[in-house]
Amino acid sequence: MRNLLFTLLAAVTLLAAGCNAEAGKDGMQTTEAGNRYTYLTTNDEGQLAEPGEFIYFNAILKTEGDSVLIDTKTAGGPPPVIQALSDSIVTADTGPVEDVLRKVRVGERVLIRANLENFPRKPPGMENDSVLLYDLEVTEIIDQDEFNARQEEAAQEAQAKAEEVRGRMDERMTFSQQVYEDYQAGKLDGEIQTTPSGLRYIIHEEGSGAEAEPGKTVSVQYIGRLTSNGEIFDQSFERGSSIQFPLGAQRVIAGWDEGIDLLQVGDRATFIIPAALGYGEGGTPDGSIPPGSELMFYVELEEVL
Image (tube, rainbow, N blue to C red; front, top):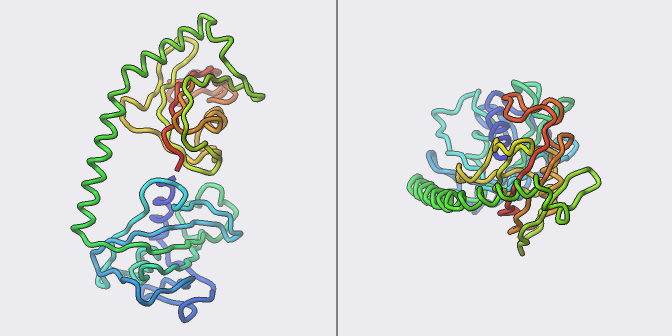
């Protein structure tokens, strides 16, 4: 999700966005670079960024029909941030997000309409659209020193978290291996539950946190193996970082979208996923998952964001 957001933000650096008149601060605004935008809310007392300062903002990306593609408030992860540009380096090719936000005060919202015909390629799902709307709100402005301090703190926290996750790896690998062996021996037949789609699952340990919900971003640790031979084809514990994705948005295989939706934070479970809910009869391009493979995933739901 976060990668898609910044892909779309980067894409608009190639164009000058047009904007229809909207109610706002003196109506239509036009920057020196030719980018046009409209104020949705104003705050004349809010802080305005100086060149080199960092602008944190919320972004809602949506179609002209008002279907929301990304909302950073609900997507999870850190908020997007850009560095304010100076007038001397802004050109007609400067993207409207970078150009406009340096003129927006903390607490203000603006609307930019980006012409998709000028994108190198249209975002997924917008092949028949002509306009992408950027609803942007500036939330905070900080200087270089504060930004560096936050980046260092975030890096230290991420490192500590990664070490904690890696520290659980051996125990989780041993547990997952035992589940696989018990499954092959038929010892789990009385514990396995089956959904109408054919997904089979076992809840090993119940948590007490928030329930997973479609549309929300979830954070999951996992170990994936083939049921045919027990071979592990992917796992997150060695990396020390979970996978995050918006549930129900088809960013993962169908068996994951369905299975994670059954969990709440703190749950530990195993999914047995038929090929129809996994990688189908084609398998994966790299061959790590052969065609028609049944898959077993040990999973831990860490967060619902």
